[in-house]
Amino acid sequence: MKKLEMLYKGKAKKMYATDEPDVLWVEYMNQATAFNGEKKEQIEGKGSLNNRITSVLFDLLRARGIESHFVRRISDTEQLVRKMDMFPLEIIMRNTAAGSFAKRYGVEEGTPLKKPILEFCVKSDDLGDPFINNDGLVALGIVTEDELAEISRIAYAVNDALTDIFSKIDVRLVDFKIEEGRTSDGAILLADEITPDTCRLWDLKDGNGGKDDDGAIEHLDKDLFRRGLGSIIPAYEEIYARLTALAEAEGVERAE
Ligand code: ADP
Ligand code: UDP
Image 1 (spheres, helix red, strand yellow):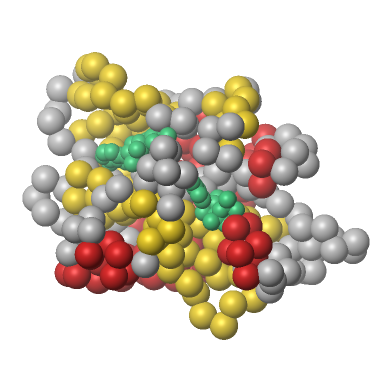
Image 2: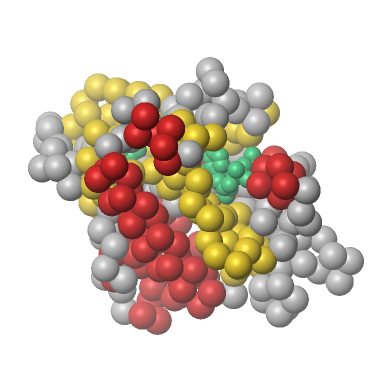
């Protein structure tokens, strides 16, 4: 497979064309951003960790019957994916109140939710990724009713599978963001990345629900960077080590 021209440089990844029209070459960068790019830093090792974490997660999901754009990991920082026509949406799933949701409704971070909440934001850096409800999505023609039903079905299935995966490695899956798109043959699939950049992951190792004795959250995710709480690298390494051990224990086939 040949790497051709760069098609897009985002905040975390570079996307390249390949000599195969349906395949993209993705390079994970060391750049970390928060608050719509306002806070930005280069963090040595982040690209490699996220590339490896998302790869093992896509493998674990495939073993649970959830297909994605992931083809295979080709190096520390690179992977091949199926080229998709992306829905311009951040698809957010919440199991526990945290972040902007906790702030919006004035509830304490860590409050369990009686059911998972699926939220959509329109992907637009200029508009700050505004929230939109289901009617808004269809009314604006961003998706059809049928697409919305399938996008939502996949999001709930991903939540069930990820909740199972993270519970097996003593991590609380608080919330996460995914993206979906359409393949050239019309199927809607999970795409982009699933990493500690895009999930809130709280450490359950000491059996206290993800908070320490003083009530401070034990973050294993990008909130360490967003909130200036310390280096993300040991946390991301911990997530990667636990996921790899799980994949090995489950005998999951690895695409690399
Ligand atoms: P951002 O665009 O938010 O800065 P990234 O740096 O992660 O984010 O850029 C990756 C871009 O590639 C995103 O816009 C994402 O929607 C898009 N993308 C992810 N997976 C695919 C895919 N399989 N095919 C086409 N585009 C994809
Ligand atoms: N998220 C993301 N990209 C975004 C916005 C949110 O990956 O542009 C993830 C975030 O890491 C968290 C979940 O989506 O796991 C919910 O984020 P929230 O809406 O609470 O926003 P935040 O508090 O991060 O602003």
